[in-house]
Length: 214
View 1 (tube, one colour):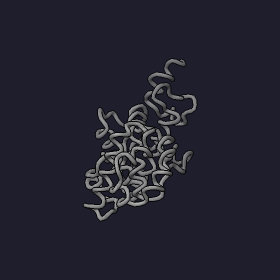
View 2 (tube, one colour):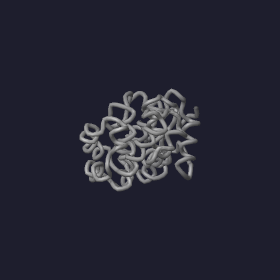
View 3 (cartoon, one colour):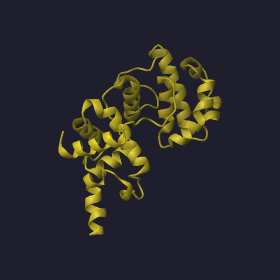
View 4 (tube, one colour):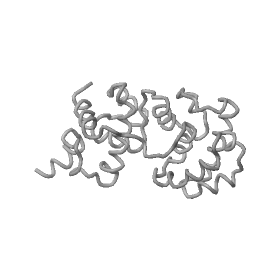
């Protein structure tokens, strides 16, 4: 592990020993639904709609048999509700027809499910099956680039850099460290560098903020 990774991961390990998803769920099926709904939508909003949705559709079979109108009624306040309604029903139908109603653990098999891209597959595999994979969303992408953990030009390149740089045993937690850091500290519009514990190791801070202070 190079020095930058060691310093940044060491800070998070010491100062944020517990890091986990802010989505609320109680099964692999529920997590998959929640992550599909969270695309370009806040976890807070998703957590507002999922309790009633989970109560109504307790199994893949129940969701697979649902009408578009009924599912839409539960999730209409999230972003892109039309597409996500189709994805949820299609995902449940594929689970029933192809996977014996179980969420697969394999990344490639997960990506066969409607609404499940690489990021969603990595989140589910990491959280549910403890797979040593890194899910790169907009927060993880932004923070990784600013810190200098990756200079990748796209999500896949950043994922590959993080996978190479982060030890297997830290990957699941590191995803949440970077995501939550991006959500609350290293925000898109105006990063809160004055509150950032990893600022001393950050490329963005040294090139932009720290230089302007001198």
